[in-house]
Image (tube, rainbow, N blue to C red; front, side):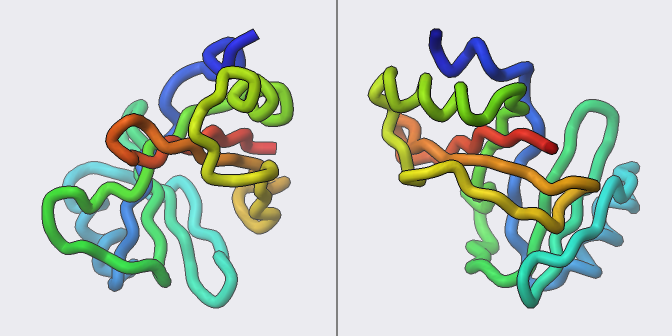
Length: 129
């Protein structure tokens, strides 16, 4: 099996911010709705949705404030453990040595791992539990 066998499409695009409240207001002003607002350690993370596009935006990480501001692209994953094993078997450039978790996101948390693409872009594989 390959990692593509465990993904259903794009889940979200991740963009860090140094002003979450203003970022939420901006995306709402262009038609996005807040799909979720969650604690993320000492910071917060918001998911903004318009149709089939979801933007994850969060506080606490460096912000570039120029083109290239997207931190990662996340793929919706149906079985994170099998996808992780398939990524290892394919020899993909794994960032994480194990599957990571954030229990405070969504109702039951998320599990995810990251790889680097050929241009060192971060691609996240994420399963909402």
